[in-house]
Length: 350
Ligand code: CIR
Image 1 (cartoon, rainbow, N blue to C red):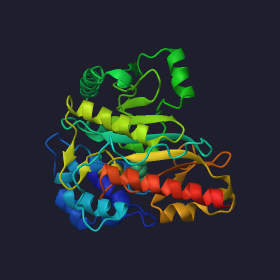
Image 2 (cartoon, rainbow, N blue to C red; image 1 turned 90 degrees about the horizontal axis):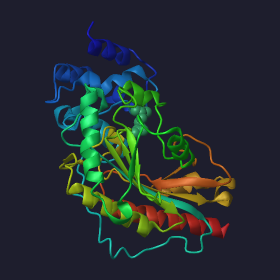
Image 3 (cartoon, rainbow, N blue to C red; image 1 turned 90 degrees about the vertical axis):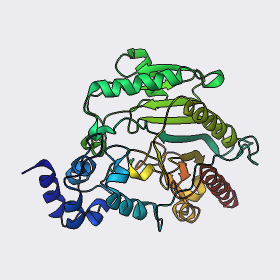
Image 4 (cartoon, helix red, strand yellow; image 1 turned 180 degrees about the horizontal axis):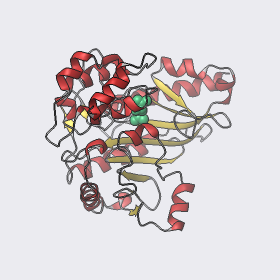
């Protein structure tokens, strides 16, 4: 039996599986795509491997490369519409807003509730495959090299240093762990999607001396850009990120597709790819059991402060925008800003 036929048999026979892959990979779509290949050589097996080996996946589908969204369109569109709760895949053109005239600044000028603020985006090199279809160390190394050439042109507060996972010293590693900057190879969904192949080759972290601008190279996505700082000054954090994106876009070509926005490895991040979050102290809302319902009504997602599926500590939650697709970057930021301000009001009212 071919690997693909084996994967298909696993998911077809899995009666309790609740993933979006299970829901939308019909026999008809399987037959339609089973011999299809992208121009980088990516296959249906590359896209569904993780979801078939991990039947408890929520989504179960990854893009093998940027072209997967076109070549396996019927499957990806169905999963994308369901996950992102959009009637059609019709993402607007990027719009970061007028960053010199945002109309908001620090969300918590007294420094009472917001511990820190972070905004991240994912970006993919247009010309390289995603992990399931990367076939060689050389490809990852080339991607790392191209990225570093661009990062090394950054100036002012964005200028920084690269810490390669392959060559960093024990002290550098210790510091990156203490700063919660280091990424690990411990996610089984990502592992089965090829995310850790050739680990740790071609991976690393770039950051500026003040640790307010950070780039992850070849973690889940080819690139993740992160802007962060203590306190609630969302305007400064967002402006720094947009500035970095615009500088790097002059040197690198990021994968983008009309109607889909920026393309990412996992279809859940597609579109703006933007996650804007605060670590916020809301002990009263949490104790009253009101945080989840409040966030849901504001299109926000609460998480424990050590990432998805972790518990909260001391009433501090990570609260971020939920919608990534079907709105512009500035709309996503404004939605998060308004929602966080509502949460602060609700906490103070208790
Ligand atoms: C799943 O389907 O549950 C996993 N493949 C993860 C989906 C969430 N996406 C992500 O972490 N980027």
